[in-house]
Length: 158
Image (cartoon, rainbow, N blue to C red; front, side, top):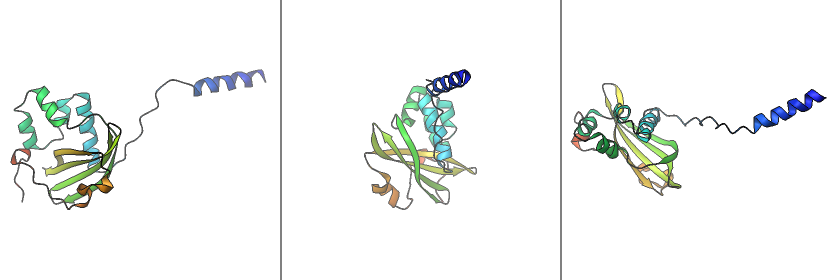
């Protein structure tokens, strides 16, 4: 009985640990699997890591900026939380990922446009509509029609 009390006390102490909980797994989608590490790199201030995920045209533009300016140029809005893929739209070599997230505690809709370069999806553009749920956003309803500035793409549309 004495040992049962000690074990119970040890179990209670273990349950009261102040160790942080492991991070929750993020919702997955093929395009989100590219966007999440890109966004994480930006949050860490790791420009080199973030540049691995951008299109050749966008990378060329970023190379004309100082590292601080380049990071500011791709850090569209921060901090973002509770990110989850809402919808993916793929049309040939173009794709769009619609995200649901929170920005300053406001439910928001993110739109990330991609282009396929050498068989891999690369990020061309990211924008956020703060205060709009994806179900109410025209971005979630409209067909994929992205025409980024020529500097953002390495090759013209076909």
